[in-house]
Amino acid sequence: MRVAIVIERIETWRGGAETSTLEFAHLLAGRGTSVTVFTATRCVSPPDLEIVMIPVTATPKPLRPARFIAKTTARLRRDPFDIVHAITPMPAADVYQPRGGLVRETLERNVAMRATAPRRMVKRALAALNVKRRTLLGLEERALRPGGPVVAAVSKYVARQARAHYGLDGARVRVIFNGVQVAAATEAERAADRAAVRREYAVANGTLLILCVAHNFRLKGVEPLLHAMARLTRAGGRDVRLLVAGRDNPVAMAATARRLRIDDLVTFTGPTERIGAFYHAADVVAHATYYDPCSRVVLEALSRGVACVTTRLNGAAEAITDGVEGFVIETPDDVGELADRIGRLRDRRMAAEMGAAAARLGPRLSMTRHVDEMVELYDEIVARRAKREELSVNS
Image 1: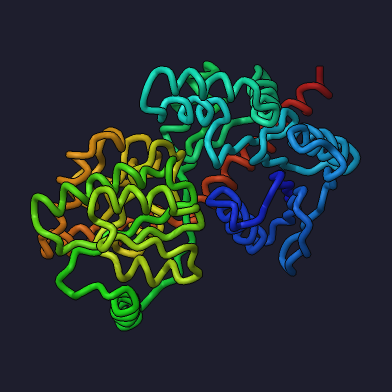
Image 2: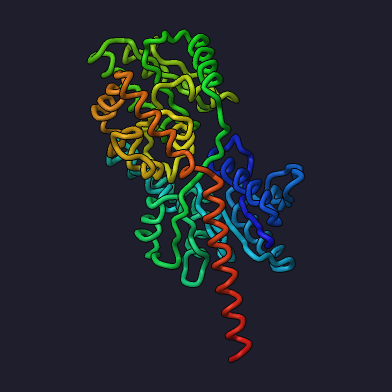
């Protein structure tokens, strides 16, 4: 089978969608499938798959997604594939997998996270003037018209969005829960990582270490997490630390930590290549997101045996049984609930039991399982197409 994967940008520093797409492509190619990735990113093809650059740099930046899709569609007409699997919305695809969430829902959540009605009104007006967002929304609306691609939703949360925004259900939407590829670690390696990270950031053994991993601090709920930290210190003492790992600018959030008088308990580490070691050092991963179709951070943490606290605005929350592998709160603005759930993990026995339960989820959260289910969908699409062609010939 020949599979084309279409994604406008594929640099993994951009976030989880790009990282997941490349993980998926490599695993799919490892099964003997011929995989070609069409992207506007200039990069060298690895040995196991082909990367084809579709140049759009001469196009005004806001219009590049549409130009990229138009040029890729023309290229695929000349060289057809068995399956066209689009991450960027593409009307001519067989599968549309909005790894970053549906464009319409992303726009609505960006408006909803503003605290007041006037701010939401301003944000909605600015979004309406954003040419790139309007371009992406137009592509998605065309793709999700009748007769378009199957939506491969990375969570039930995304499937509900497809139904709410576009009226899609049944055969047009398939939930194929997100997956991650996590390297196995021995207990000795985990212990060494834990000791090294805690030593580097001066975290005592008896201190509850909270880890937040985010590249967009506002969207991923760092501010309510800081307020939850302040409540934790007032309720149970200052034996708690927060590490925030990610490339976003920390100036505004650091100022909030100072105002809350917890700046000595919060460290913004910047981006790290040692995220596995950070997970091993943490007692709990807090992901108080305002919107996440299915967070890799939570899936990686669970797979590594770390209890998680997240929100129902995160599709990855579907992997957690509340109170077993972690806790799920309604929204990031439930600061009291967020503080309470994190604070419960000061109980070392509870933290250990939740971590062990989280680790048992590993096979269900694997990218290998995700690939298995996606290949089943590919096979169904190819079989349906062959049946239609047979009926057309015989009619």
